[in-house]
Length: 177
Image (cartoon, rainbow, N blue to C red; front, side):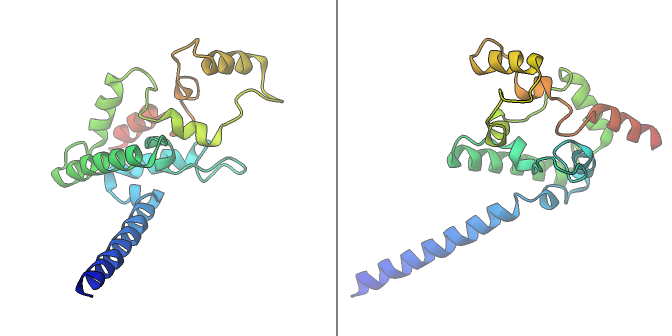
């Protein structure tokens, strides 16, 4: 009988921990959570004005996690989420990477418009890349992408979709200071 109650208590605890964890994962997937630190305010502002932000009517709304986390399985998603979360928390607590000047230097060192966005996130919503109403130029580019004839990614061509011209916005904000 003791063994049965031990298993029962263990099972109930496991269920409670799983439910709590699932709730926390859902809570930390919200844009409001991502933008709760002051260093992320600029990213929320630029996202809101972008094609997938809150301002455009009729556009698909994307949350931060829709683009900036992989969608190739739960384990990869959770590991990446934890790693990025720890990195962001460390940066916030230590004050490193928390300034507009830091972000300007960061973006200047990158190739133009090379963002840390996952193709799998784009593909969750954009399943149909070749279809009615798409211009011939886009059909040609998407076909090359689909059959692997190009190394370009979604954001190689659609670089303004997530945050607009982020570097220009950062530079403009820096001038106002």
